[in-house]
Length: 484
Image (cartoon, rainbow, N blue to C red):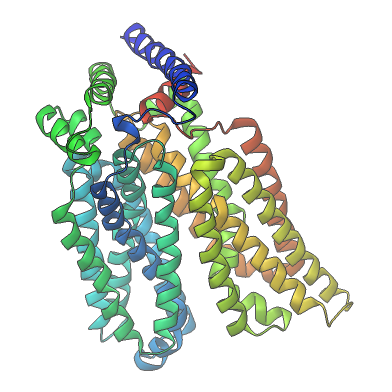
């Protein structure tokens, strides 16, 4: 069986090299225009399917952005203590961890569309519990249910998009997920400053309903159908996605060949991930998620107001500036990812987050020494904006893109669950520890983040390959081939 898998892997790697040579010759023979093929066709149904899927990302952003503008209203109306509200905020992460654990299995058992539908149902129930809550118990239950829902969405949305999109736009389309998370956060914060917390929760149900309705009009992932052996449906869905007149024969044959081979020789499970041939993929995905969170993301994003206030800068102006910069840089990342590639953007992004941490840490270092009092607020603003903008350029979305690309479909559920769980756990650790570490040393906190970001640059340089412009099967074959 191992010999069979190695044979199919080598076959795909050879095909990739031949395709590259063919594309070069096609370009030369046709005046610089590459011949079209089914795998490079972007149809209206692909666009629609992606837009429907990223409604789940907007739901995610709404959930994350809800607690900050709602804090004072909830505490006043329900009489919550600071400790009770802190638990309300953190229980979202607990729900997210639980959702992450089961995300892969759910997406494999009922499909990508089914998993998104179940997730949004949990989110709707959670938001309704918050809207009608009369005490802290219902409030926490609602937040927990929303956490469970977005825990699954954080895995299944990028996976679905990566499985339906052509290779030449896969990065940009999957990056839309991160853009919609940012839009969800920003819009929820804006609405929260205008209306009360119950109304915000009620409005948050709208994108959930739009997502559920949209799922009725989009196709299931062809690769999931192929894995389930539903080959007629697989071909029908692939044809819909690539266009009525597109020739899908070669793409369909490649997907079926690779999927059939994997189904015949492998058993899905967490322990299976630690076999030598999958170890590289696990290290890459888990490492990126760890650096994404331990590099200071939740310290900067959850406590933006506290950082500005500590430095003597207007938190309102700072938060608005941060939201604008994040959306602009995420949009720039979407435009560049399939032109520049994943690896260069990750390197630039991580270097920028390192610089942002150094600038922020240095400003608080000056504050501790009582030097440059007039420049400290501006220096902190620059540091925070550099960090958040750089993060959104690459590290915000690309780790999720790579996670959705590198795991073969036979281990995707267990690997995806593991990687998503690592992300949520890392997020929880940073969120919980940030205030305590900040009390120890404001400057030291950001210098620690800077060191971690610096280590992340080395990690990306040494271990992260480029996946731009390759089919999922080619990427997965190259990753497993390294350790065969």
